[in-house]
Length: 148
Ligand code: DHK
Image (cartoon, rainbow, N blue to C red; front, side, top):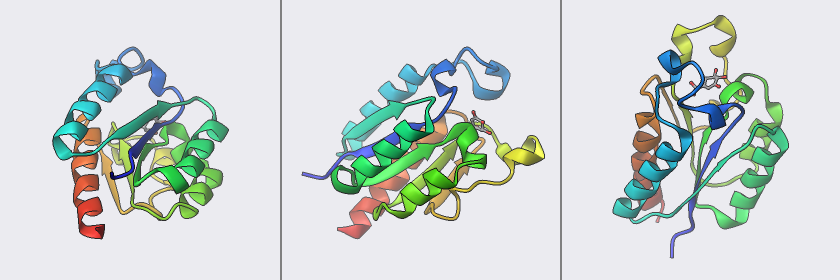
């Protein structure tokens, strides 16, 4: 059986649907997790969906994925722009990595334009709202099938 795809979410994404809905929309992270689980089933994949406000917890899940995960989809949120440690953890992971941002970070403040993660990611999705997670999952299915 194929290993699960890890879908990891960084700081403040637990407040999705409540914080700045004009930027991040009204869907909650539980809504996103449910939609991802339903799509994963259609695609013949399983997922592990996690969120943490702590960098170390995200790093621990990436380490876990080294042995237990087929791929990683990550929205590192603000850590995108600051975390060499998350980049290093992803560099220690061998499978495909996709980076998701709900908002179009390039349309926002200059400090959001740089991502430490993008140089490791097979692809980056930004500005497609929470639909970006589903697009990333479809792409992950394609990448995993091609790797078989
Ligand atoms: C989410 C955040 O919390 C921000 O810190 C990032 C990202 C953008 C998003 O669009 O999903 O800058």
